Length: 296
Image (cartoon, rainbow, N blue to C red; front, side, top):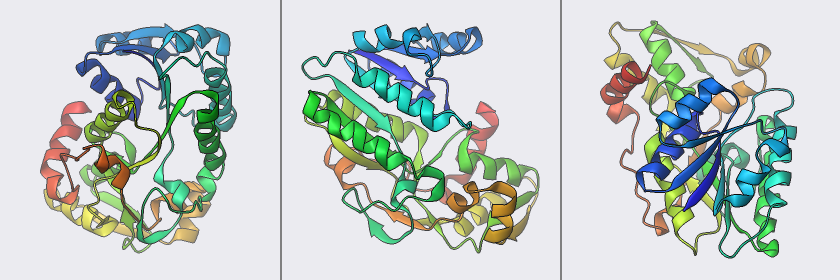
């Protein structure tokens, strides 16, 4: 199967690229420069040099693929518009029989969820991702045009050096961890390689469509994660709890995401046979520290 992938050198995208290559699929990966082209090629992909904001640089590659997997997001003032442009470009390409589109969203569109919620829950997005439900809807509506549309909502991704858990690993190694709020909030978590496995599963299952949550259902609080990482750090770090209003002044709307309390379930993913190999950050702290050092 031929896959067109955006974000193939990013945190989620690199894991997804690896998973598709391991499964024997051809991956055309959109990259911005020669350095990233080398990174994608080293992982087994064919680089497509271009920019998501410039459709002519990748429209043909997207049109030639059996399926399109969107994992990229540009964290800049133009990020939302670039995301919309990518959807415009992909959805304008030919819709052959069985052609699929996988769009990466996230659990933050659910908003606060102190009680367990699944894929049927109403959306109450936090400010940082207030635009995402509209983009999800565009993808899902593409079913009427002949696409097999899929929206994946990853939890907080862990593994390696990047992401929110990667930041905690770095902070623990630097002997000072800052926790936004009281730390009793739950983060719905997912190991990067387990998440990537779900992308391959939905791509290769012709009956898979709609929304899929992806998290390990460990229901760990930030305090539990921090305590475990502190225990495995080389030196015991100090932990400072930063009130949310203070954090918002310094970090903007991202602070709300860090303090969000969510208990999320992924029944539709599990119905496909998806079963995460890791179910806990706290229970795998030593392993994650080793990965962080090795991949850093």
